[in-house]
Image (cartoon, rainbow, N blue to C red; front, side, top):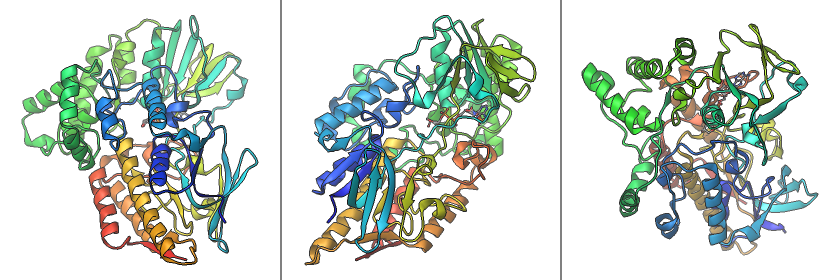
Length: 533
Ligand code: NA7
């Protein structure tokens, strides 16, 4: 007999909703998280300036309509603290905390073919037997510390943004920030005014668009509330799932003046996803269209940044084909005399010493180093766990490359579901999570109905076939060849980790097409899955 029906691991957006849905099915569920509270990503990423760059109205759950219409969000973007408070509020509102156990890590999980149950070993010493194992471990969760010689010798303070301390004080200090992705950009802007000196150590310059943040007016909120059903419908049927209008007009089909007008108007309005997807239909597909967007942003950098040397270092020359970055007044921050930029392509880091960061040009003496160096994305949190399926461990299953069927299951790992696992859609996450949790819950609901039909009550095993998984992995690979993202080294392909062989880690075909693919699976009797005893 299992101890519980389902074990959910992770108390972020994904784990909380999955717990809610399984309770709705009447299952006995336990949720564990290694943190001391709910939040997932938003528990750990509490660095200064941390916020979501999805628009506030769609960076939340859609399933509790009453809450959706009444819960406040003061600005167009929600801060880490606001998101954390929101998740705590949802947990309280739905009385979910009683199923949760914190400061508890999953250490290993093994499937036993004779009992058809999973046995999970927890860091508390507990052993749990469960019919369903649901891992909501987070996509941007396992932090990536760069391999730099001497890193351990640094005598000052060191912090990774993805594991930020509860207390810090940088007043009067010299701070170096390594990394200029979404996080590095946010932390650089936020720290600039509180430190004595700030140096950004930048490996790849990025195209950064203003976010257009500001207070949400009562009129704006009323309008969103009146149209929420249509907004969610639009989000679910869009590519990026960001509540921005996605253009159908190719960039080169209009005059140069019109392109300039469109880019300028979107720049003034703000939001990186809007800039990438609302301007024209082919910015991430056509090299020519992409270069038009690049030229526009480069021009903005040269106009905003007063020091031409800093402007040159901040100017990217590659494609605008990474996860778009959006932030308030990033380039303006470098007009402050005490904020500087080091271009690591010109002057690479040779080592970290007791006193600071040494490049091949000079030693930058520092009191604090902030690592905004990102994550082992998508599969990182799985690599530290032992998960044993029918015949092999997950590590063995992924020996050649990281795989999944639909981002949620692995062939040979029955009744295990990865909520936003590898090869999940690369989109605004709350609607992506809802899509997957609803799908997983549908599978479990079918298995439960089948189990109840059997007088013996035997466990029904939901399992992806190897063929279905292989086909899905191939579909993801092909999608990855169809746009310009493949031309830039980024975490979408795991290319941010030095020793890793690059391979697509997401479905880059848009939420709309992913949802159609799931619907097609359901309409065809859960094609690619077997339900067995
Ligand atoms: P990202 O987007 O992976 O950015 C990490 C940054 O750190 C990026 O600028 C990297 O440069 C840089 N980096 C990584 N390793 C090194 C080394 N060894 N030396 C110098 N610089 C390095 O992570 P974020 O945390 O900013 O954002 C992750 C997601 O969280 C984001 O997409 C949002 O969805 C939220 P690179 O560009 O690889 O040259």
